[in-house]
Image (cartoon, rainbow, N blue to C red):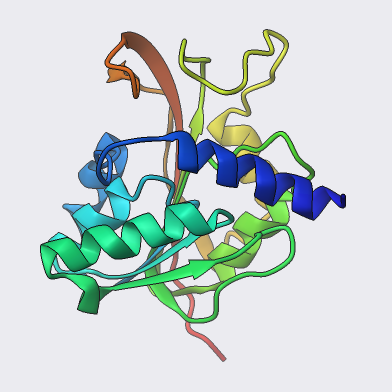
Length: 211
């Protein structure tokens, strides 16, 4: 089995094992999107779909992307239940191999971590180039390991916002860092357990004109 098939199988099993509805939106996503005018959004690694559904219910046209077909179909089904399927497009992508077409006003990459090979900097750089002028790329990484995380490796390095920005190596004449910090919050896991976690937050805005 190739690495790509291993990755798809792992995440397919992960999402099929999860029960319940579309999940809750991530607080940093809400906090950021509430300051913006709704437009076209891209949810990279949509997972349970909480961010996609929240954005669509608040006027955004959302493309929801995940390597897992179960995750994508769950988002589609939930959007149909809520009558907002006209605002949600679901696409299955292995971001190590393909990236959705289009231009976006907001691209959200929440917890885009995987145990499989992924050139994350390339994916996020591609996302930055897919922004419309004035658009925002929001990258939120784990800054700590939650008790319910699939990754229990105590030696895991959590890249800081500054490290992530450096890896992207974006031209400061065309993109600017709007936010780079590491807030703490009280989080609730899928089984109802709670813990204080750290989010590493990077928000980048594109401000050049396309040639």
